[in-house]
Length: 289
Ligand code: SAH
Image (cartoon, rainbow, N blue to C red; front, top):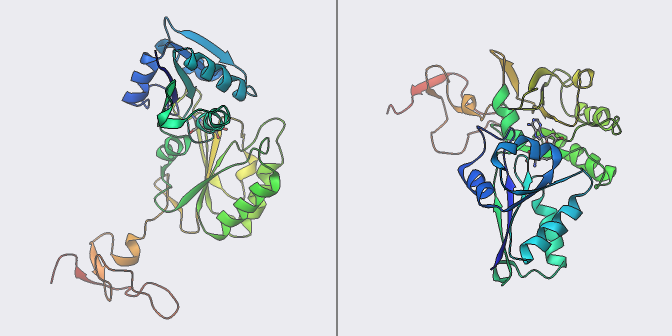
């Protein structure tokens, strides 16, 4: 029997936002391996299965165990919250398998399937409005495996590039200064009143959502189950929602839908000499001659 390794992301909360394929893949697995908190979240799907709970720093052990069992012909699931490829188990698994001589799609003994999931940034964004409608990036503030200067450089670049920034692993009991350092870098590029969302345990029992500002970002409780979204220079809060405009207002009057003077639909935005979109006064209604 050819073995199988399923790398499954079960979404932010594990029930309503679990994909059909993730549910089927968990059902298909004979063995399920994961961090104990994650196993708890999907416990009702695990009846009758061989389950291995592992601690936080045992990721590589988990991978070796999973591969050994798959090579013995078992169907093995390695579960991550969110998406398995976003700071999840897909990376270390592929690294270890490549080192151990696995031949990829040609391998005669073990096939591997990565099952995509709803990553934290999607879950978190959905709870605060539409904060990601323009370019965004994710940065993990964990320096357990990445040198801090590398993280710092990426925060700096995200600030300079005006990306909306999603901060994963923002803070833990032992990592308590990185978030302040990150805020200080971003404050070089953004106003203190830039909207910030702090979301803990999205779609889980202890879900907690705070809308605040960049200046106040570090005055709230932030832990390992928190993701932080920092707006770009255009992000604003209205009706209690965090909104990052896509740019419609550069071209259209969003109330009347009239196109602005000098602009054309389906054509590049027309800019003035200072690089600003032309046509503040709405002209012809969209679709009209
Ligand atoms: N693979 C996961 C990320 C693992 S890294 C994914 O794709 O979502 C762990 C970090 O993810 C946490 O520190 C937190 O920043 C974020 N996270 C995961 N689940 C979350 C949730 N339900 N609510 C808020 N943040 C979450």
